[in-house]
Image (cartoon, rainbow, N blue to C red; front, side, top):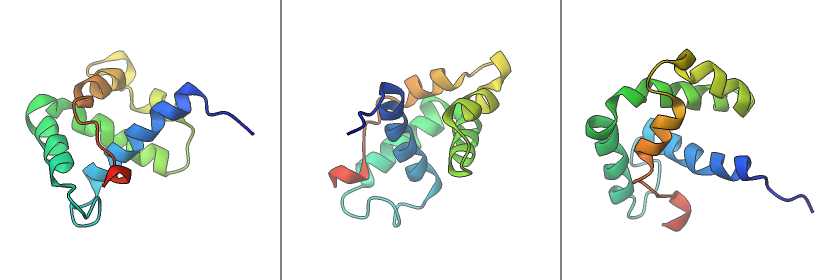
Length: 101
């Protein structure tokens, strides 16, 4: 059986966050998902609003079927700020998943 690499495991929470950002609350986490959605929305509005374009870029790239490495290079602002890694740190307080609901 093939083991999951750490980079693959790190991608799963990012994808869950992207789902919450791009789909209305009624479609994502229908049962008691309000707290998670509120956390994500508040972080995007107040905690790290400059990350919205970066995270949307990453989501579109990944959902388009491109590799993670290609998406990181494309969406990481070319060395500018904020970097994708900065945005992931900023969103870290919202550790939520539809799987837990």
